[in-house]
Image (cartoon, rainbow over all chains, first blue to last red; front, side, top):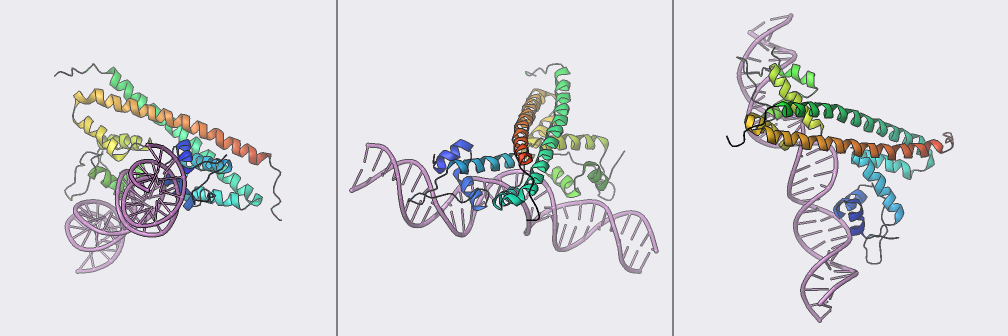
Length: 124
Length: 124
DNA sequence: ATATAATTTAAAGTATACTTTAAGTCAAGT
DNA sequence: ACTTGACTTAAAGTATACTTTAAATTATAT
């Protein structure tokens, strides 16, 4: 299957400008073009984009995502290093989760406090 | 107790410039000054900073934190609105957590894939 | 055929959140 | 007395990640 930039844009909820930007920055390999010069994304491209989105969603910087992508393009020898990056990313996600759980406690405490207060007479 | 900007900076792991910036933006109420014009933070100030840090850590924008702080300064009547903000913040945190859990699955899958591969002969 | 919509590029612009700089004041140590 | 270090300010600078613009080409619909 092949997809236009707009279709991909809608699929990943990313504006076309961002897709072009990611490609320019080397986060997505160079996309094939139709006879008209328009980009034509294939299913492999979509998988790349999926990975990039996942990494970005964990807060990985563009530069760091690029480093990972570059390793992928360098072949099998880089697998141990790639594994390290993913392991490190896993830790980051786990830390995020435990940090957010802490924040949830703070927020719940705050809510409990507000709920404890007598209702405010809004008309006064 | 009173604290210098450096002490507060170390306590919250925020550079002094950021503390001044937060104050300038109205995220922290105006801090008292010693006879020399230097800031002197008290325990109430530290509590504010704690709340600001918590909100920032959940990804709340400076502007949005300011809105909450402003409501606090407006008195009791704003409690229902403040409660709404905190409730909304709670949802955001919960969404973050479930999003991160999804990402964790993706990462674990990736790791399982790497672990399945035969070890790379690094010398070749 | 012609208007509208989608794509292309490179380059400039924007938003957010700080950080750095420069120039000055103030207090403490030698 | 003088240097060092901590603090002050306003203003400019920086980093990151896009987004917008402008000018051109191509595709689609009437």
